[in-house]
Structure formats: C-alpha cells, structure tokens
Image 1 (cartoon, rainbow, N blue to C red):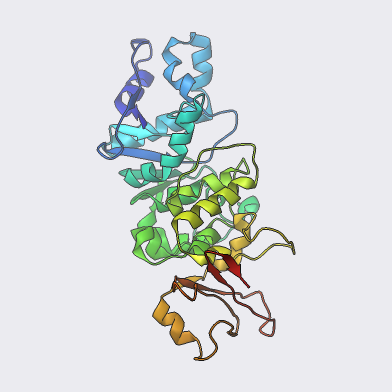
Image 2 (image 1 turned 45 degrees about the vertical axis):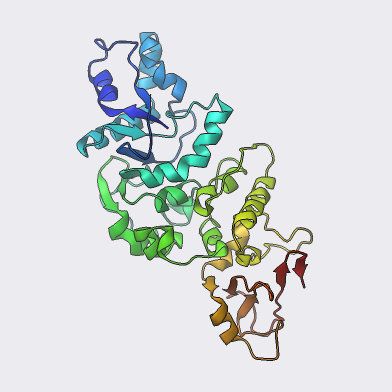
Length: 360
C-alpha cells in the first residue's frame, strides 16, 4: 500500500517555498509491519485531491497549486496529518490520494485489500463532516440529518460499514476536527444506528458466530455512488476477493453472493425477502432485500435437531419463524430468520440444499 509521509506533508505545507519539488510524499509500505493511521470519510465530489495532484503538487505552477490547496479535500488531508502527528503516527492512508486510480490493477488490488488495511491500522479517524456540535449525536435527529435517516450521513454510506467494523480503534471527529468519541465507548449508540452488535464493534467479526444474512442486513440501508459498490464494499466482511468490473450494475451483487457460496457453507444467504414479488434467481438483487435478517443466527446441528419433532424430517412450522434447514445428508449449518413483518398465520416453508441444487 502507498502511505503518506506525515512529516513531509506538513513540512511541505509549512515551508512551501523551501520544499524540494522532487521530494516524494508517498511511499510503498507493508501494512503488516508499518504503524499507520487511516482516514474514513465521505467523498465530496469536485473537491477531493487525487493521487496525481498530490504527487505533483510541488511541480505545479503557483496559481494552480494554490487552487488545489484551497480545496476542502486538501484541508482534510492536512487536518488528518496533523492529527496523525499528534497521535505519534509517521504514516497515513487516505483513499482519495493514496491510490493511483489511473491503474485498474492498482485500484482492484486496493479495493480487495481495503478491509485488511483498515484492520491493520493503528487508528481510524472517522470524519463526520455534517456534525457541527461538540458531542457525538446519541439520539436520532431528523431536523439536522433529514436526508440520512436521522443520523450523520457517514452511517448511510456503503463503504464506511467495513471502515467502522475492521479497525480495532476508531476515533470520531466533527466538522471542525474536534474529537467527539470513540468506537469502544459509543458501541451501544453505534449498535442502535447501524444494527451491528456491540460485541462485534468492540471485538471484531470473529467475536461471535455470525451468518451471512445478518451481516448483509447491516448494509441494507446503505448507499454507494456506483451500483457495483454495493457489492464491492462488502467483500472484506465476507473474506472474499473478486475482480472489479464496473458497468455490470446489479450483476456485481450476484457475483458476490456466488463467491460467498463458493467459500462458505451458510444457507442463510437464501433468507432474503424481496421488496416486491418476482421470479427468477434464488439470489437477492440487492443488500436491501436482507433488511429483515438482522436477528438471524447460526444454529448448530444438535440445536437444530432439538427444534424438530421426530418423524417429521423436513417440513415444519415455527410460530413467526422461517427455518432454513441444513442438507439432510451432510448436516451443514442451519439458520433461522424471525420474520416480524409476516403474519403468524401465513404459510411457512423450508428447503434443503445439496450438490444437486435446491430441493423444495
């Protein structure tokens, strides 16, 4: 990964006239051996500073350079560097300027590695640019955050889900770069906002058994600029890798599910509920179709056997539950989904999955 040299960036900013134009502000580093900070933020179209501009800043004509430095995105870089220096970090990663997006291979590698990069960072700075108060908003506020479900818009973006979960330490900053809390202390509020259990927020994905449907539910209300981003932003949460193919629309989410099925024996991936009646693929079209799966859970084979009546091997009814049951031969994992929105009297059904396909 390419990292910003915090000292060089700030020296360049403070002594612009004396800076060597050939000085390199970005360096290739190993994320597993380098101690670095990382930024999580919302992109602001038109004002962000890219890789080419950041590496060529000192070679620009003064007038053009001054325009770049006045941008909101450049000030965000400087403030992040100042915070990193204050916290004792020599290196910083920011997605806007640390990836050369002219290279499709570099962009693909970065997106596939991003979860690991956030996970290995010493600290993640979560910049909430629409929070102008000195404390973290702990209650829904539809007047100030009307367009983002009553919470800062950072929590509605697709890519910030992994940026919240992956790092061990996340510090939140308001519009003026004042600290307003951290992930550990704010875990109960963050759980309310995001649906991510506080145990996961504090200890990571490995802290508790999780099924695919539950993880998908956390992304149900989030948005990305590109449709494909809805899928690519979730790869790290499921530990899968895929080539980046933009222009395919919702097919990207189908590819993600197929990749998950390839590496995980978790049939809760079929627990989605369509937003409107449709026929066709057994796979969901979008993470939003997992909205009702927030309380899905993994069921071990012995627990599953205890839930059923002897002599009724594969067809059951559970009040207010839909059982997604395991392969009867291989005894794979099973999962159940509480479907709050459905009537208790509605017909419920099960299906099994084996190498021949789905058995209805």
